[in-house]
Amino acid sequence: MKKNKKVLGFIALVLVLTMLAGCGSKNNNAENNAQGNASGANNAATEQSGGEVSGEITVLTQRTDIVDTVFKDYATKFNEKYPKVKVNFQALSDYEGQVLVRMNSDDYGDVLLLPTSIPIKDLPEFFEPLGEYSELSKEYIGLEERMVEGKAYGIPTAVNFSGILYNKKVFADAGIATPPKTPAEFLDALKKIKEKGDAVPLYTNYADSWPLNQWESVLTTVAGSVDYVNVEQPNTDENFVPGKPHYELYKVLYDAAKEGLIEADPTTTNWEASKGDMANGKIGTMVLGSWAIAQVKELAANPDDIAYMPFPTNASEVIMPLSDDYLLGISKHSKNKEAARAWIEWFVKESGYPTEVAGGMSPVVGAPLPESLKAFEGTDVKFELQAPAKEGQEGLVDKIDKDAEIGLWQEGFKKRIIEAAIGNLNESYDDIMKDLNDAWVNSRAKVTKE
Image 1 (cartoon, rainbow, N blue to C red):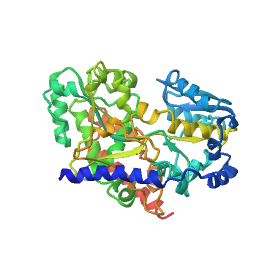
Image 2 (image 1 turned 60 degrees about the vertical axis):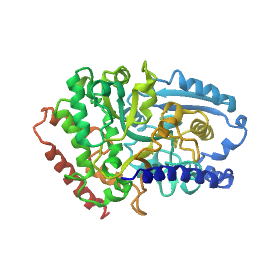
Image 3 (image 1 turned 90 degrees about the horizontal axis):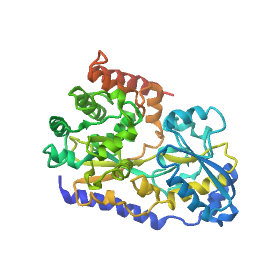
Image 4 (image 1 turned 45 degrees about the vertical axis):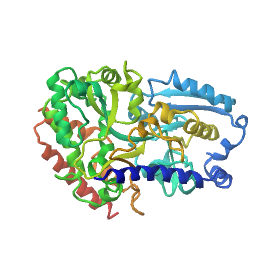
């Protein structure tokens, strides 16, 4: 690999975002008014003076840790611009599970995070379209993941990059001088941490479940191609076979668990406690999005101990994929959609949440890059958006996955892998992969014929 090629790739990303900012429209009133008349979510409302937007809205969030502090401060600042809007917050500890129950009724707040477990094609049944993708993409990046028939249904709270959070002091104490680059090097590093005996080498957060889904976000890194997830994956019958990205990705999890390099008792893990343990050197690594960097750093006596690295890969190029954090949308049943839209745009553009709290990039086109991303300038690491699906195949991966009941973004088969590795299930890793691949093949054959 040539370093100058990597640097050019990184610079190209920055230039693309900057150029997009230059061509972005600042006055889309015609489009917004048309959209608002159709859906009630009039973007133009936020271009009027704040005093003309009024109403009471309920905002659902997964951030139980800051809902009573940071979010209340946001509401105060928001009211300086929109004094006639009252903002209420409801934090859900098991966001995906709890919000899906609420969505069986018409009462699931006004502004909420789009659940990843809802099929993309079903979003119009629950959410208001925020506008045409062709127009909104001039203002925001990352809208593609929740787009239906050319309309965007959510705006990212942040654009994350994915990899491994680690404690540099734990690595140094175990004699690990540089971050491992390949799966073999990574497992060797974990073994050294275990031999040292002071920290859990790889913390899975098995009990809380949802952190296991973070593994799926590094698939692009393992593949070494931005085309794999949305372009190649829906057109292959070898999604979980040896040598392919999914097989190689989860083999790392299986091997780590089988070698005793994870928690002694995965069923007793605790997400909130794990952040403090990582900060204090009791955990070596966790597979998490960049959003976790700030959360752990703020708990560390020495924030510089907390660092981030790409997921280990044998690919010829090291790509840390840019992907959406949760997207904010508006309930189809909201009675105050203008106020809801005002909150979303203020939150994304003015609160500082995307970079200061979420630890990622702002989804606003042309926004400055965060310090955590600048740290990789001049390295062999590339930061790239995943290639969108081919025309006519939008949402196909999601459709195949749902029909096959695999749950790419659910914890089910990840837990199964861990259980098999530690001996609680009588099946091998290859048994699991064959089962998943068979389900994928059968589903793909069915879905592509529909």
